[in-house]
Image (cartoon, rainbow, N blue to C red; front, side, top):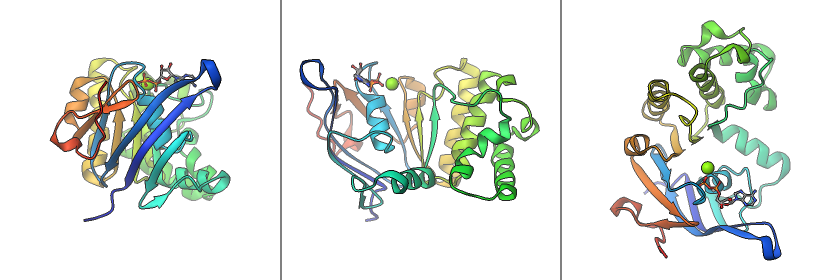
Length: 238
Ligand code: ADP
Ligand code: MG
């Protein structure tokens, strides 16, 4: 049996302290296998984004363990943590987080710049990623000049540029009309299938969730046992 790419055990996340504190994750455990597509579903406020941020090492859990390729991640700090995140993950969020007055290409190559890749190689790899999303003709346009669907394609190109092992997508079609959303969705699944990139997608879009290999359902900070394939989750509903 190969080691799962992510092993999540008894994750807790509490925001704030004292009387105003809020426990957003109450003990969540599951594995993610390399190359699979996993949907994280559940109502608004159930803890999906919290879970994704913690999984993507953007935020620390209050307790519990996340192993990435078998390695415990809670010992990672500072530059080392940034490097692991930058080399291993790509991010596609509902808000595009593009720098509006910069070119499409400079937005896409930002992760490479952070990683210290030289300018000529950045340009090459940035253009390759944009070509994959059929956005190379817009490379020198300002990001602000794009439509919503084009922006999200640029965001996917940026998520790809570092050859990530995992793409985390939080409501990636949430700001798009249905047709554009379907196209963007298709692009994410193509990357999953054709390049074996593990796809973890937070969504309350039933169609999007149904296209994933597997889903986990978050309710009030806990996982529900939805089906056979979510074995290994704790699954205690209230
Ligand atoms: P979802 O993505 O499923 O809508 P979230 O993970 O964003 O849910 O939020 C889960 C719960 O945690 C919500 O009740 C939310 O209000 C609370 N929460 C999220 N972020 C914070 C924060 N930074 N401080 C305090 N509470 C938060
Ligand atoms: Mg959310």
